[in-house]
Image: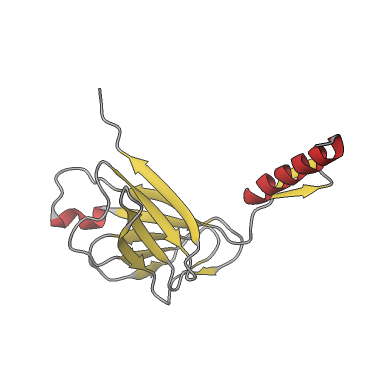
Length: 165
């Protein structure tokens, strides 16, 4: 491989890596991060409420999503899942048609049953209920994955419980 071919290969590899990380390259001399207009993240998983796992604690187990983007995003038919160690999706929550997040708004998805509601505030937030009568998130740790309505993975968060030694 001659020097010119090596340089082109390196430049293509750099471009591929940069594009995979939502990075904009201009003339290869300056690299700057670009935020997409929408970005829904899994901010937190409250996977192990304090005390014994009893049915009255189901609402203390929840996942928090946040819109870190600049545009309002509909979450209609998006799904939130937990995964087994093999990657199988055990539990799937499908977001209702009415749920959308404006920039900085959050959605709290509680494991237990209850009435979904939208709370005005700064920022406003959705309080959603999965409607399950058993815990979803493993106390020793779990992975939450968020998919858009087309099935594209939008974010994933893995939590583990650290044990004292």
